[in-house]
Image 1 (tube, rainbow, N blue to C red):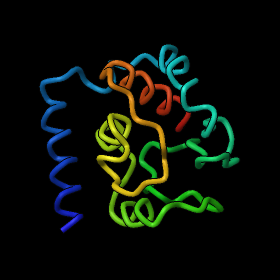
Image 2 (tube, rainbow, N blue to C red):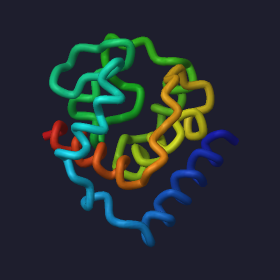
Image 3 (tube, rainbow, N blue to C red):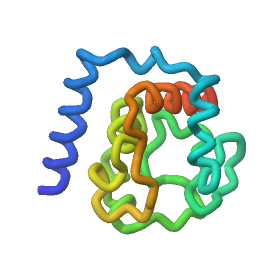
Length: 128
């Protein structure tokens, strides 16, 4: 049942994205500034985990798959069938606890679509 709800949410985000600016419209330089909100818990420039897992090479990686990081059971379950693509990241960054109920990530999310697009562009730049 949970997979159906997650799938429906991701599908809804993808469909909504058809009328929104493309993810490629993000600005990685601006995304680096927005990412400062994330730096207390995450890094993008190394494989070292902090309070949260490393986000180095996160784009197109299986969710919940960073070695050596102890994920919540909710994120481990979510990672069983989800890849961090632009649409999934956008949904998660909008409101993490709405996409992955039970995640231990306490960040409330990024309200502005452009901020999310910019962070995704920044993460893409660091996923080469």
